[in-house]
Length: 264
Image 1 (cartoon, rainbow, N blue to C red):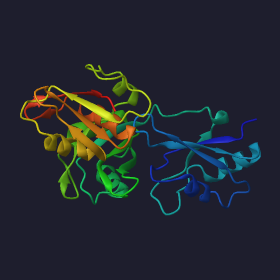
Image 2 (cartoon, rainbow, N blue to C red):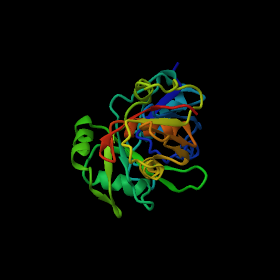
Image 3 (cartoon, one colour):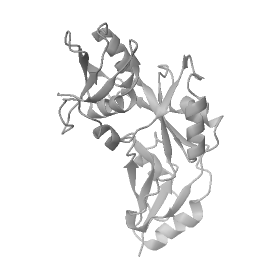
């Protein structure tokens, strides 16, 4: 018998404790498991609720599904979870949003897109875990591929707070891993270094730091003289993956650069 419910449209800043509190009035309390997004590495917007009995799960499904979640603009979206095997992410479409102002949080980013696109399901501004300051980029999830594509076409350069946004496709991690290494090491373990190839000879370490710094906290930047390449080392593997996905093919100092895994 199935005792697990699938719950969707979970906002990226909600955690297990908050989800659990929503069911405080239920006869049975669920164990909450949130799933992480394959694209961003952050909460995917769905999870599973495991109840002691099938009856407890059924009562919660019948009572809460479709109802407004207290103190939010969202409604419960639930279904049977088939023992935690129901993975319904095919209808989610994420885009990357960069160049965000320091004061932009989840709610402001959400409202900026929500006011223009009805299928927006969530927004997440990535925060530095140590300083709790914004890293200057985030992700927005859509229920409609058409609206996600439309956002990519129309939201580039639109202001959110005091800065124009830079939007692009949120590339899956495995696509980043499959990029040519250009002589760099294979991505293994806890590698946090990005190789940047095809650099113009005039490119400085400060220029690379300015361009890549918006994607995560940087440990070091090196541009070996006369080699036409550079290396950017981040504090986390996740930041390096985002940098490879978003900076590969971008123009720096007038030339298009290649990004891949480097050697930590």
